[in-house]
Amino acid sequence: MNPRILLLIEERELRDWLRHHLEILAPEANVSHMPAAQFVAGVQTRNMLELDLIVLALSCADSLAVADDGLDLLRIALGAPLCPPVVVLAEGGNELSAVQAMRAGAADYLPRTLLNAQRLADSLHLALRAPRRLPPVAHGARRGRRRLDAWALDLPQYSLLHKLGDSARAVVYLAYSAILGRNVALKISKPESDECQEFAREYTAISALQHPAVVDIYDYGFHEGREFIAMEYFPCGDLKTRLQQPMTVTESLQFAQRICAALEVVHGAGLVHRDLKPPNVMLRQDGSIVLIDFGLAKQLEQAHLNSLAGVLRGSPYYMSPEQAQGLPLDARSDLYSTGVILYEMLTGNKPYLGATAVEVMQQHVNGPRPALPPACAELEPLLDRLMARDRDERFAHAAEVREALGGALARVNSLPESADDGAVTLQ
Image 1 (cartoon, rainbow, N blue to C red):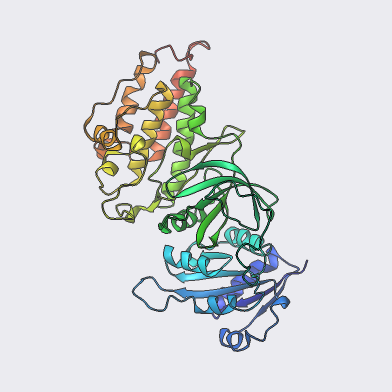
Image 2 (image 1 turned 180 degrees about the vertical axis):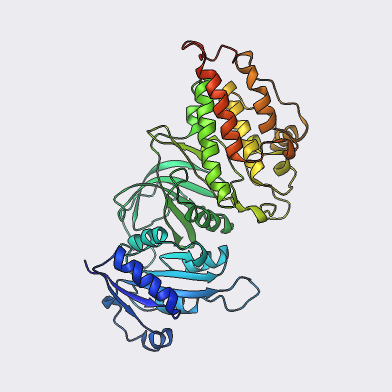
């Protein structure tokens, strides 16, 4: 295949950079350029079947108060019959710009500030395999596709296999991607959900974090008025499932170390996860872990902002005291959640329980932390620092926690082989 790619990019420096990378990524491609005005003038008469992909650069508005969101050229291109996939390179804009672009029908939305060769390669690879925009299909015209429940969405490129889980806002399915040729975890918003920023935020956050410790995202878009995200599927399950079986002290410390290593990546990118809990820690066959569900992730400088005034988001069982009180968050808030997870791995129980979410959150703020079992009592100072109510008394960085966990592991490994059975005091 010799893909035919049209560049609608006025900025010469960006256009040359893109051409250079296309020569490397797709040396057989036929790449052409056209001024935007010329494209618009002939868009209705142009034979779109002559193109396999359009890449266009847009200057998007940073504020909802601006009437022109900068997406007019995208809408004009996508309005043409049989338009090929369109990838947007966005200057400016924000999460809502990404939502609007994907809702309009863009194959991908790449912020210029996050653009690199690997991100471009991944985007173009998927876009070139995406279907053309077809005329609207009459309601009920599709037959025979499997709908698992009332929340299922008939996405043409995915075959739903079974439900993996759901929440108040979304359902996650195991699905087969015809484009990728493998199974994916497909998250679809529920019909009544009006919270679109969470999906957009997750897409933006994960796209910026290309690392083995962070889930891969394959696709994001809108269909029939609902959002969807296709992500890496983990057949080994999550840490919540693993916690159904007892863990040794060594295993608990090792898992905590891997979580901290992943948080180093997240925090290093200027993000706070804000919803760290065992169901969001996935396991691979090699024993490594992967963080998922970045729907609540925030930039550090914006981590004090809630999606809705007066609404607290996150799991009350793993929520830091400052998050329970609606205070500004920082990386140490995720470290507190790591401490709660470590406590649960060591003991098999959550540190705080209650009849209501409010009761649990109040205990994070005011209640005494239950002591560790005698077998691991010497880890108390480590837990005290991780779960300190005053964040200034916690570890400052995930790397610092990982180093402390390494010291604890060294002490465990220095014990006789039979000692680490969950019933011996650390020396």
